[in-house]
Length: 209
Image (cartoon, rainbow, N blue to C red; front, side):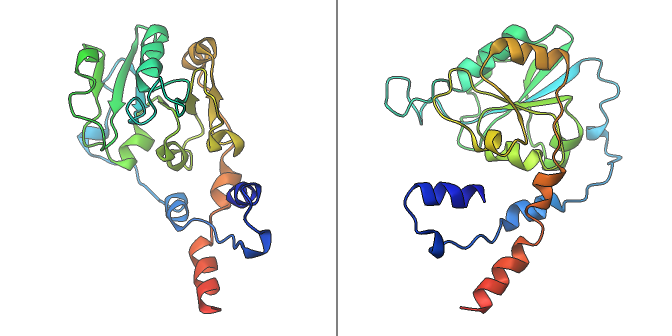
């Protein structure tokens, strides 16, 4: 009912709102992956712990000198992450399709690289930690992982993932550092169950029109 509450707060009459769910999130909740034997998923030989950073194109979409500025962007977040990342960690950056391929070229090093052609299944299985900002992908991954971290320093607004209590969220770099040292966990079963039956609910609603 999160979306319904937001709609009512924005002035939409409650009696005109139908809550059917989200078929996409339902399909992700029902996603049944099997442990792959593909060599690309075998990371036991990698000594470094792996962090996957879910990037977004925020810097140009919400400029720092504009009224839309979020209080942070992908650069401030990744800079903080690099500051507190332990030496035995490796960072992979999952870029958004909107972002230029060479956007993070200056960051690449022996322990920082790009996550190229990673599938959803790989993102679920491989990383030791997943860190992002406000991407919908964080919610999708939270369907199958209870350790998703949302880091938004100086954020001026809330992220709906926080209100749903399905991600580990912080604005403080000190807390981010603690999360890297001790992986946080949160209960996700109730969140997954909210979307089961979404397709059926919407189909029934359409049939009654």
